[in-house]
Image 1: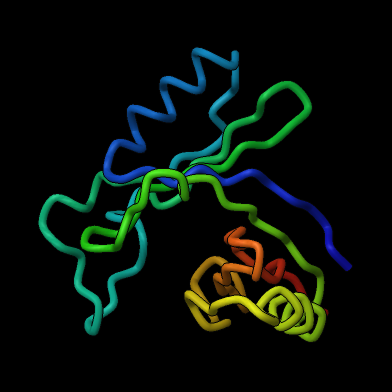
Image 2 (image 1 turned 180 degrees about the vertical axis):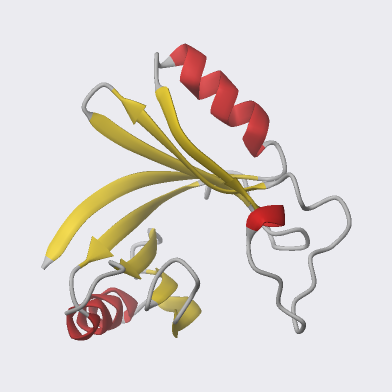
Length: 142
């Protein structure tokens, strides 16, 4: 079952500034800001210099609604016009795979479903209409 959908804004190194801007402009409460420097290190993917303060994930509460935001990882492509994605939270690993595969049909896989430190399964796909989805299994047992 799908448990939630969030608009997800993707910045190109100015995520900290964007969080403050949207917080003030939308009277939003900042619930969480996590930086790339706070994520567990990975020997195959070292953090480039200057990336530690980039936003890995920010969560803002705008009235009754949630808004998510992150920076790109340094060196990732960043195209103006593609900075809004949709994050979909799914209950259950099988359902997460099903949703991901259905969205991928006729589209393009950007990041294969895989375990991450924040989710048992996470992946990114651009569907056949050009919408980018961040599909994430909720971090709970099936």
